[in-house]
Image (cartoon, rainbow, N blue to C red; front, side, top):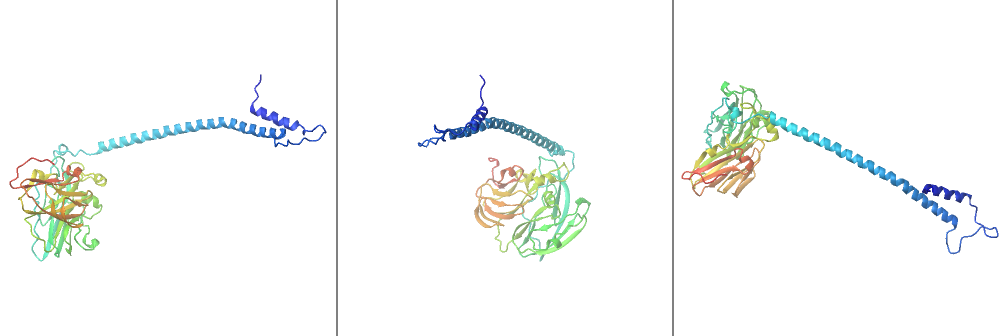
Length: 414
């Protein structure tokens, strides 16, 4: 027996509706709807036609929607596959890039530097230099470029440095401090490589944060062998940075051209001992070669040191006396990493920084180029480490020790 589809039933119903005449009563008149409000046969057929039409539409639409759902699922699956493939390609590309960078990075180990001539280490004296005599404080600042180590564990590197009034710090990467009193008239003469021993190969300059002068006149760049003189009045007390301002400044400061200038405030109380500490970063390139600009831009120093050499005051501590009042002048010369200077085993009675005067301080926080001084006493005989409390930087060399005269060695590692 043949099965009748909904569409066929609908067509038959419509055909019956078209061929059927109006309903007549026994007298030949059209019949009227029942008085109870029921539907006539014609109205009922019309309702059925509408229902069949709806059912037919639903019946035909369902397979279409099912097909559309299948299609969309396929598209989604394909999209996932494509994204996954692209992600895998990106991961593979990133891994390959990392491998290439690792392969391209120079070996800066001490072993890799064997055979390279470099200056032998000489411990910088951490005692703050005296203010020069004379009504006008005159400083000759010499630029020199030299190959030295900045860590026992790493290869030699080429550093650009400043010498002040004939005081060089060869064998390290630090430049000598400049010290004056507030209100002093200061005259600076920059000499960019006075002779072949200075080994200067490029233009340099000098910028003093302690001065109030027109930079385009005072901080000019000069070629090798030239000199430039300017002067200013040190009106403001504090611990200031001086540095090379020749472009690109990051490269020159990251290669070593930074230093401390102390302007002592008027009526500064005397203390038993004054020390200086400059925190500085080093970015090693090929052994014996220039500093690595890529590492500077990425803020990835190989060494962060106090006074130009990693952990030197751990191996060669600073001798002090129990109970004496100590003032330490601290500069974060950067160029990019913050410092959190802290002396373990004491509290700073007084701390003076760019942020003002504070009492009872555990740590001073210094942005690159900021400085200050702290005052304290060491109440007991012993070893007192000083560090940046950013310990990931401490392990790169920013550490040292203050050791009292009668201290017993050992007992603590930090």
